[in-house]
Amino acid sequence: GDSVTQMEGPVTLSEEAFLTINCTYTATGYPSLFWYVQYPGEGLQLLLKATKADDKGSNKGFEATYRKETTSFHLEKGSVQVSDSAVYFCALSSSGGYNKLIFGAGTRLAVHP
Amino acid sequence: IAGITQAPTSQILAAGRRMTLRCTQDMRHNAMYWYRQDLGLGLRLIHYSNTAGTTGKGEVPDGYSVSRANTDDFPLTLASAVPSQTSVYFCASQIRPGLGVEQFFGPGTRLTVL
Image 1 (cartoon, helix red, strand yellow):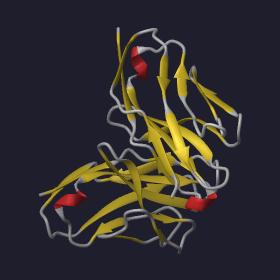
Image 2 (cartoon, rainbow over the protein chains, first blue to last red):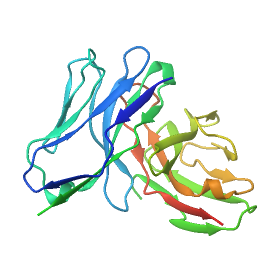
Image 3 (spheres, rainbow over the protein chains, first blue to last red):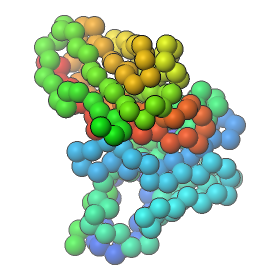
């Protein structure tokens, strides 16, 4: 079945460091890919998405490119801030999964001043 | 209100008791979802509804039931709670079910079953 694998956390960085959170997927057909972010005590909110191969999603300085050849959707940011501390979830939706979201386990990011 | 509201915010429940978690959205979204979030497992789909009057089972439906009598409300019921149902529960909605369509999440309900 469809699945998402993302790197285990926690990831601890200093402010202004470069961030990469790896995400790979298994899916039938051509899934849409998402990154959701969960700030402490809140629900999830969409960070960015890509709906076809080679698309790049971007928002708030974060970006991720849909790589079908490597079945990956890695999240990157060039310079993180303390306010980026949160849990990040990679997710997919595919026709094989009846359009439902399949989530990875989540990666906790802690950014220190 | 704007968006999705969930109630209660948190609850401690004795095993064997019945509990209904409430979810209301005011965005007139057709599709609604219930997920549970457990450490190391991400979010897993419990039940979903593509439109008012219809429901379907997700990945982990056992022990839970839902109803969708109207567009706005999507309650989740635990008929007889067990400790393994201790979790954080999130309701979500989507303007329509489909690939690439964003889901909007409520703030969650933290449930502890003793």
